[in-house]
Length: 129
Length: 383
Image 1 (tube, rainbow over the protein chains, first blue to last red):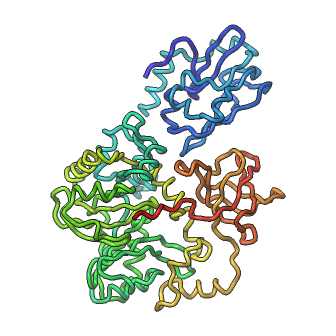
Image 2 (cartoon, each protein chain N blue to C red; image 1 turned 120 degrees about the vertical axis):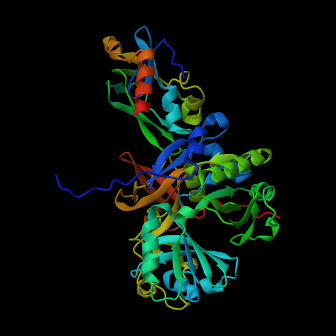
Image 3 (spheres, rainbow over the protein chains, first blue to last red; image 1 turned 90 degrees about the horizontal axis):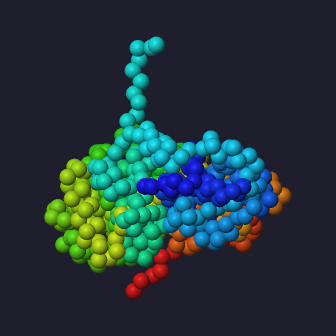
């Protein structure tokens, strides 16, 4: 499995791709594979305030419910409405199916997140347990 | 430190465990058993695909974690009648019935399929999580009868072949005439070269299908499993895990021990009246059920369909319109074939009216659901 180097990752298996003062957020390919068939993505509304490390929504597969954690703090500027009707897009292309776009509150928070290589290592270690 | 040795229950594995891992199955703990929950998308699997394969073609399940108890001897029928709620005297040789083992208070030890294999020979298929409890209970409850009780749970690898094409697939691997075997009947035949294999037209998917009982050594189990899947290619057969098994049985409203039935839920509450034959001779639990019947039910099992967006899950609270807690969800999931979010729940009888609206509490919010007729899914009658 390969993780694009153009973004950062969290230990809760989200990715965040920064573009200036804004960023797109989604879940990793590893996360979608662990979840299985995704049938429901619950996301906040535009304008909602996210704070780093806190839950902002959930993603449900046939079998399980999983919380989504904000990688960084910010304000939701856009929500991928397509996922409301086609949640399976997250299975098909997890790194392309962004969930939210947020305006960053504190861009410095990004530096504390994992690089693609570190995330890959983290996933491998987790699997080893 | 005490000198007493603590036995840590080992994870139990079926003879096909290595095969599942090799195929890339996601393994989970199910009542102490390490079982495949689903196979990978790379081989056309995943819970939804596996579920759909069973509804439209055929799916193959390793269900060797299920237990088996054999009762044989001159008083085998009397023993089975004493410990189970259905009427085993109605079974012809080769016929099977859904039934349950009850505690004296009319609640469930387990649900079982009782097969009559011979004049005085019965074969009970029981749940994985209750194997030891069931066997001990059956043995202890039948001591007064002239019949031998054997735990054959480890003797078989049990493979379920389920779906409208199951008959076509299995027929290619056996000399037994499957067209002559009706639903809930059994036969014996050569399967994949193995002689005298028990073939039952039973299952837990609300679909047509078969369950075969083959020797439980790893080599034989793997060979038969692989042969079924490779022969099944022309019928679009896929391996299926416990995830699809659960969604399939839920669509068909087939109870799961620890969810719809348990040692605190009685037969009337579970709505299994038609499998409980009060008119037959005495059986354990009968007296309590007789008494319960004359009293009004405190709760009853209903089918729910989510009206608003949200998925009810096992254990979620059921609320009335005023937001008061009135019951709980026993099983809830997206239904892949019906493409709805469905659930089974215990609620008071006054809230059980078909068409009525209730709420399911999902992460602190009441989400609307409608009481609907069950089973949610009924297989179409095929000519």
